[in-house]
Length: 54
Image 1 (cartoon, rainbow, N blue to C red):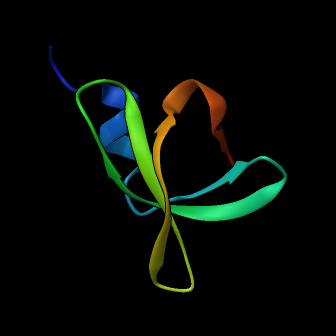
Image 2: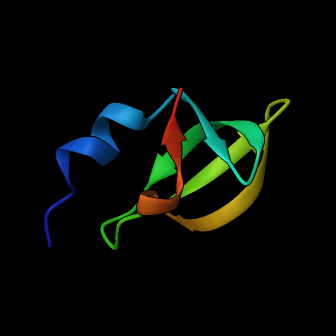
């Protein structure tokens, strides 16, 4: 499975998930991503469909 164009563009960008703001620290081939706050990864395997670009 190839990494989608959306996932590549989101790395390092600010997104909103469950009402909070996060930075996308990495994306995975299964269309999930890891989110960080204050320099620490705090959420793993979040579906890309659930994050909203700011």
